[in-house]
Length: 322
Ligand code: ADP
Ligand code: MG
Image 1: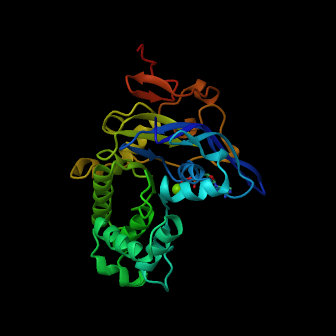
Image 2 (image 1 turned 180 degrees about the horizontal axis):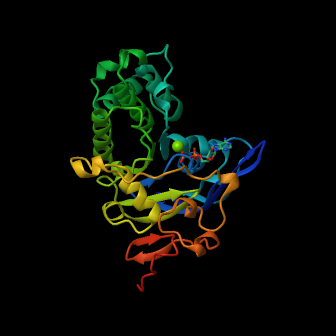
Image 3 (image 1 turned 45 degrees about the horizontal axis):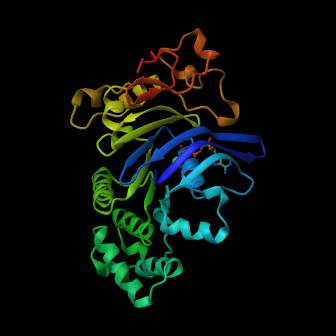
């Protein structure tokens, strides 16, 4: 059984301007010990998916489809069960959370509090566990005594990961956890997540707008555009040989590390993803697509199998006979 499974998830926000269909039919599964990457430009619905998994969306948001954690329907859970699940089954390192630690409390106390609130252990055991968690994320245990402002950005990010791991979740969702950090520190934080994933059998859903970050890390990669998955497959394959024109553009937009040619000449991708409340007709990418033809403005094809283990939602992708 998958530790996390999304079945035809739809999320529609309410806004003054009308409904905002931010996620439009996403199916995705995460197996134990797996790392799955979720990529796509800003505004494609990635954070909405993260919030939907633990029912953290604003009141009034419409959700349909299913979110299953270890086979249990998250949207059918009673409040008490949901609170427990939020720390012990799945935890999220939120996008832009570097400043979310309480500035006037020592970081160790903040981790201890989470442990005490959600697990049945003594204060002394919580303190010991906090020290262990800090060591696990590569910080000396005495950093527990520091206040957030006494730590660097990279160290604060490690504290946030320790906090997410406080109650030993099976699934960790990391929503752009490294974007605010410099490249060296990003690499260290990624290496840490990989290590935790290997050592603890943690299942990781890694969200980023930077496709190149994901290729080495992920067994599977899903690329989102305008609230849908438009391409899916093994991480390396998707990046090295994209089927969907959007993935191709994304892959080209990020220079390959160490390849001077690609750094000098990134293909780039003009324009922005569409506003979900005013999607273009047909394939929502056609207005920016380099290979769009007349039919693309009226035909919106779903994911089709392009090769074994690979699928893409583009009318120009030959459906493979497998
Ligand atoms: P990503 O994480 O890929 O950048 P998001 O999931 O944050 O994308 O947002 C997807 C879309 O939903 C965007 O168009 C965004 O403006 C819209 N959106 C996000 N939160 C809300 C909200 N609370 N109310 C209305 N629209 C929202
Ligand atoms: Mg986001």
